[in-house]
Image (cartoon, rainbow, N blue to C red):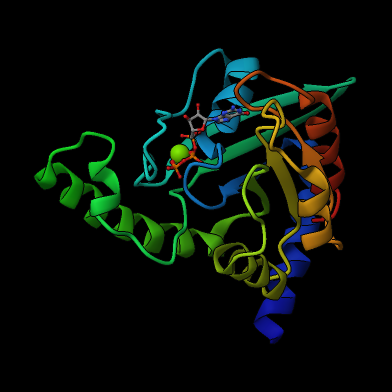
Length: 213
Ligand SMILES: Nc1nc2c(ncn2[C@@H]2O[C@H](COP(=O)(O)OP(=O)(O)OP(=O)(O)O)[C@@H](O)[C@H]2O)c(=O)[nH]1
Ligand SMILES: [Mg+2]
C-alpha cells in the first residue's frame, strides 16, 4: 500500500519534471480480428513512416506482443511521445479447426492455436506495464461478450485510463451506439483503421486520455 503510494508519488514528480518528454506506454487490446494492428500500423505510418506488424483476415495474426518505441504523435500543435504496444487478440476459446476454413493445413492450424494461446497469456502479463489502453472493438460485432467485459474489468481494477475504439465504421453493419451503451462510462470513438476515417477524433481523445495519468 505504502509502496504503491510512493510509486505513484515519484511517477508524478518524474512526469512533472520531464513533462511531455516522458514516453507513455500505449497498449492496444481487444478481441482477435478487431483491427488492433491495423490501427497501430496507421498511427506508426502517419508519424514514423513505418508499420508495426502484419494484418490478416485470419484471427490471431498477432501472436506475440509487438513494440514500437518513440512514436511522437502531433496533433493541433500538441506533441506526445508513446511506446506503442500491439497485443495478441484475447479470446476465451481457441479451436484450431476454426483456422481450417482459411485453407490452412492442420499442422499449421494447430501451431497457430498453440501460439495464440501463449499470446493471450503475454497480453495479460503486459497489462501490468501499460500507462493507457486503447480497446479496439469491431463495431459490426456484438460488444456484450465475456472477453470485452473481462478486459475492461481488469483495466478498471488497475485504474488504467481507457479509450474504446469502435473500428470498421466503413462497414454498413457497424453500430457505434451499441458499443456506447455497452460501456457508458467510457469515451467511444468510431473509426476506420483500414481507410483512415475519423483519426482526428482518435488523436484528440488520446491526448485527453494521457492527461488522466
Ligand atoms: N472493413 C474494415 N476492415 C478492417 C478495418 N480494420 C481492420 N480491418 C480488417 O480486419 C482484419 C483484422 O485486422 P487486424 O488489424 O489484423 O486485427 P487485429 O485486431 O490485430 O487481429 P489479431 O492480431 O488477430 O488479434 C483484417 O482483414 C483487416 O484488414 C476497418 O476499419 N474496416
Ligand atoms: Mg494484430
